[in-house]
Image (tube, rainbow, N blue to C red):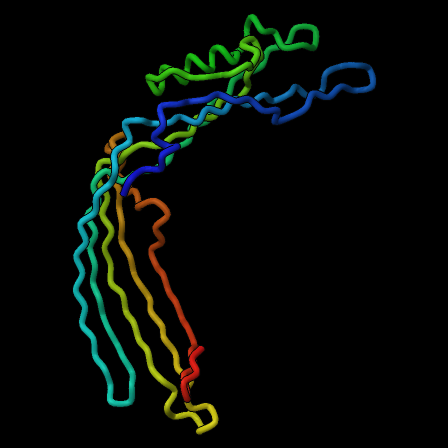
Length: 219
């Protein structure tokens, strides 16, 4: 699958937002300092498409009264899966007469330099004041993992309620449940002993649906 165009565009922008307002007590003493958060969305023009090889096998059984039962096993081997990441760094804001001391604080200019070093790219900060103090820097981006694997089994059953009285004839049920094992190999986490599951992949999925079909009507 191809990466989203905006995720692979060669553009990285820095934005800032106010996370906490500055407050003073009745005597004019500062009680809270504004939390200025710098946010950089790092685009990755070297993002590669991912490829998947899928294998599955199933056994099905159909009954004389219209029921169906199946067991399936599946395996997916994924190369270069795309994942998103986020890092957050915090910096103390020093004060001088109840105002941020820009000479000793981490500033927008420092944040831009930190992001450029991290992504090896040029960062656009627009018209942001370069001397503004930054107390938190959040970096978001996308990258390719080495590989990923998804495997599991699926149990399915469908049957009409043939045993119901005639006026309810036509009702039935379909149900399935999947048990899934997954893992992904990320270079930065190769030393971790704990296996990392594939992104947004639950270990169990179950579905149940009631249906009605009679005299040309279906719901």
